[in-house]
Image 1 (cartoon, rainbow, N blue to C red):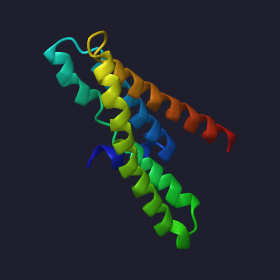
Image 2: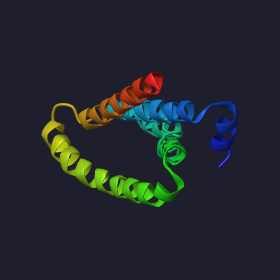
Image 3: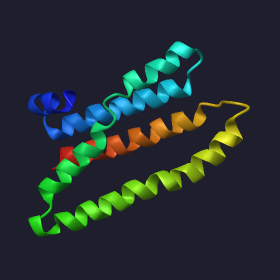
Length: 129
């Protein structure tokens, strides 16, 4: 409630989204290598800005879409936001079961990697515009 409006005044939307993505990546990587209880409690502290990703995406998309198309855009984005966790759970449940005995945090490392790839492509797209 306090951090996002403050960051929005100090940075552009793209930088706020990048801060959120980096926060999510750091939290997932730490979660993948957690070995003590205090490290587990540090994960939400690192991931505190990860909620900014969806807010930034919605903000940037609403600025690029015509007024008459915004309802359709938000509907499609909501459908994607609901579908992705369902599909990801199918993948990550099998991955976690397969790697539980060798490296239990592997699925979190993969999740952080996937976030970094999307962050990388979004940053590259922003540089070309």
